[in-house]
Image 1 (cartoon, rainbow, N blue to C red):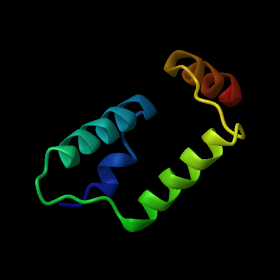
Image 2: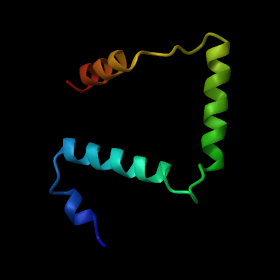
Image 3: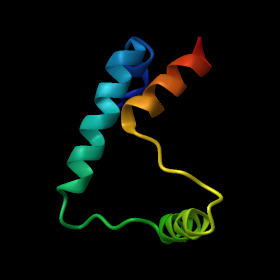
Length: 71
């Protein structure tokens, strides 16, 4: 199946919904494992949080920052 041609005809909102559906499907696939580099990134982020170099943002606040940066 060639999804590339279908993607070019989708709106941004449709593409984001498709990404969410793919992510949900992958989470429920029993043979899916995260790549090794993903663990490394998560460990680095956790370290930065403990050192006070990062902060956790509320999801609504994060969405607003993304919207602001794109407008």
